[in-house]
Image (cartoon, rainbow over all chains, first blue to last red; front, side, top):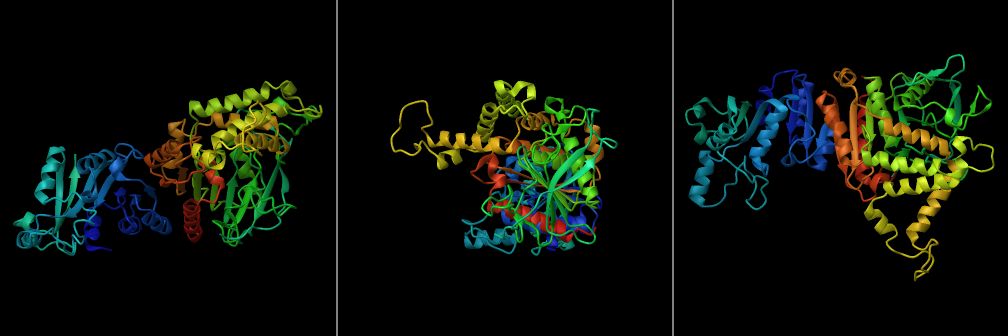
Length: 197
Length: 379
């Protein structure tokens, strides 16, 4: 499993009901269902990823999360996960609102556009950064709403959400070294947040 | 993809008798109840590879293969057969004519033992739960405790949903295609006009038209023509007929059949008379009207809370008979109660009829879902 997914998985309590928005091939859900005893449900827009989930026996609803989550009732999940997907949505604030409507707890991970390498790339080269955590050229990237940790924390506050926990990630997606805590917005390549209302 | 089954035969079995009758939701009892069914493929030794096919309003037990004429295949031959999504090389497929039907299973045209004459409108009203009771009696008769899956489109999907609610965990998988948990006012309105057409036919005679040499053919064919329009999409009708004139290049200007679409509907209406009974149409369409799967929240919660059944719900984007909102309502309720649900709206131009046709993404999804269920079958 990808290191960032392992971090997200560690933030989900065993046995909980989990909704994974933009679940892809179901890697995270396979772990949560198979190892942590969760009841998992995915939402995915890509047909190929949808079929991959079916082949693995992962329940998946094909839908575009930018259109809201009309298939899910209020507070019908313990945890809603939005892993490396927020920055690819058209309406990030609306998506956050919807995930916190259907779940009691939200777990959101995304790449940090404030990371020093990103700043250095843009500052030194004057071009949109391309890196391991942001691998696409600007004209082909699905990441249309990139943000920094500070930006995200501002949005969470504006939406009235409380940050219960923050895990900083390194360039490989694994847990960042402790020193990143000193200046997270500069030293962390990404983060995973646990949100409550 | 895959192959057709070849020659198949319809079997019959008496599942309920006058001494041990079927008790319906209404409290009425019915016996004997004979059921016509077909099976394809071989039941495994551990009896874990059975897939039950529930047919829609006017279907029958003959879902796949052919009887005598190889050009006349069963109604769901596209999806059932060796190498097809319901792969008879490894699955044991069962399809039975519905209670209240007219293709071998006891219905209003059967003889009422109390009078020695056909039931007609003295046949009791049924519910989807009653239809499922008979299916489950058949699986028990065949020695199948837990079907690997049940699958159906339209009214067939409603039976699958009801089955999953009545016997949580009995089905490994429930495949519910272009169905509804309850009909809308518009859905009921179409059924009402169809019934009005049948019952208003002078040959209907209060349902006692059997053996009179005439049946409410006019009414039944108009009912079928109307229903058929709702099974097609605007787009598929435009593609199939446009405004083309039948057997001519210029219109004849008159009230006889002129446009191709009129000729097609006439044909559909007339062909329907050969295989369907007007009373069965009344009863089975009424079963759909009264269906309300999630009417009792306590029952829904109890059934779904811990169910191990995996649900696949599918709709077609051009279906306006049971549009995607019907399927989404099923998905919403299943998910809200913690059931494991997979959902997809399939792109297809053919309207409600899509579930009978070879739509590649649709078949791929059914095949994938059943393949997974098959691989997991010894839970």
